[in-house]
Image 1 (cartoon, rainbow, N blue to C red):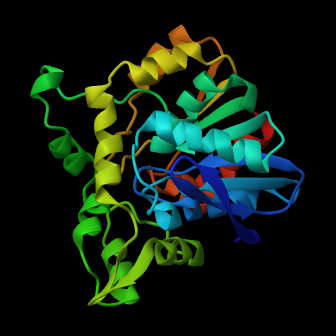
Image 2 (cartoon, one colour):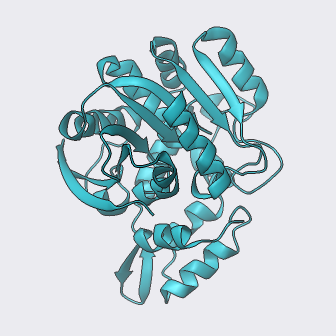
Amino acid sequence: MADTDHQAVEVTGGHLHVTRFGSGARAVLGIHGITASSMSMAVVARHLGPDATLVAPDLRGRGPSAGLPGPYGMRAHAADCAAVIAALCDPPVVVLGHSMGGFVAVVLAATHPELVERLVLADGGLPLPMPEGALEDIDPDEVIDAVLGPAIERLAVVFPTEASYFDFWRAHPAMEEWSDDVEAYLRYDLQPVEGGYRSRVIEAAVRTDGAEQIIAPDLIPQSLRAVRCPIHFIGAPRGLLNQPSPLIPEEVVRQWQGELPDLRADVVEDVNHYTLVIGERGATEVARAVREG
């Protein structure tokens, strides 16, 4: 793992916790996924090399930022990330967003173009396909439960020991690559409570953020069309449950390439949505995209 330190940045409602990986002159902002934390960026940070510093906030409702109040949503997270860049970086910077972090990155680039040199979107940032039927008839909670599966189930569980939490994740279908980095990421997620340990992630934040593409379906498309910097999308061929279908289908990627001339797209073979950033193969390719464009 890259050398780390931790800082707090003033944002609306309090202070956002930020993890800094490395000490190089070139700053990169890394934005994690919907139930993740800054520690999900550790493997990518190591592969960036000594010339870079990866600055990764814990978004409000996650990790040590869990105590920050709402509102949640992509606009709020983007405003927080803008405050992080202004406080800790020399803009413009490359912004890496994984999963939901990709959507935050897109809104950040659309609303604060002076802060963003280019975007690297790791299996996120392009609008997700919606279930069939009228949007008003879709239950966001049912969609979130179906898509996230065990990742959201864990938020309501008290685990008696750290080891039992690790065992829960070992059984996750997408957790193919176990490592010290994975254990550090999972340990960071835990807080002691009566009866054992539970995740620090606030379920209300996850559900609010996850529902946004259903209740505000125009936000991400409009934001993508407003982005004026290059975008590099890097997809995983397998999904959140290691199923043999991507979270963001190829036809969605092709559609946006037709609209956005500065959108480049690649796929990292033989990874899933998680191992794209927490596995060695995936993180190596994501880091290469961050370094080289």
